[in-house]
Figure 1 (spheres, rainbow, N blue to C red):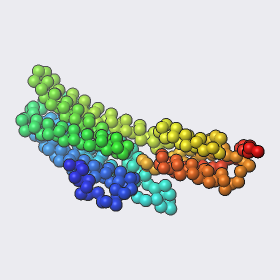
Figure 2: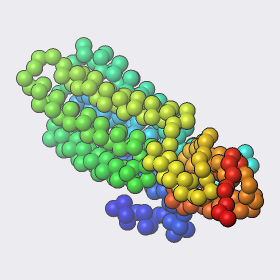
Figure 3: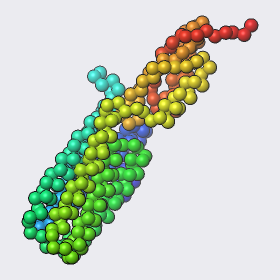
Figure 4: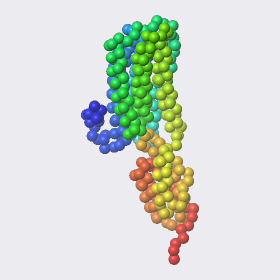
Length: 311
């Protein structure tokens, strides 16, 4: 289904640029998530209020928070699509990380409020139990969430998007949360205390935990997380493959959104060769780094040694 929708709604021009295509895919998956989660919220909230189930109401608002997450992901991808301008010469790719941070805060807040409401519901009447209709809707909900989980897991692996990761974790925990409601309904038949309230607390942790993990990961990126070690090694190999470069130091690489990295490095080159000769060599290295790693890096010449020519 997603392949069909991507062919229908993503323009051919967007597919020519990998960065634009990536953000278009995120936008489409986010739009699908918004529609599905609003529908699930409406169904679960109606059931929860009718049969007095705090756990189902919690699960419904969890779906509502998921639609907000998808909406924020859509906003983040649209911000990141904006081209570079005078004030933002490296583009707006970091907008994805800012939105991811806001999404994580929203998720944690929803989880905390669900925990408070579940604790309060311990003294209230036990819910009436799941009807065949409500059980059927919860099972359908789980099936839909499995689809969302697998879709976003696939997109996360392909495009390495924190936004898709957030939606994927949400979907996974929704599956666990809805399963907890169904299991709780069965267990309630054998226990006298309010199992529904206990399951509501369990669900609140399912909501809060991925929000906390996403918050920590996003903060690490915004504070200047080290780039992938494999990329560093590849850059090292390319630099040192140049015969004129004896060594390098002060390498700095910054990420401006997924797939957009830029930086600089000081390379040790001969002092007794012409600038033209050395520049030609390091220009070739810069182009090789961009081609193989995607990092736009500037090599600064540091004349530190002399080449001894054979007589």
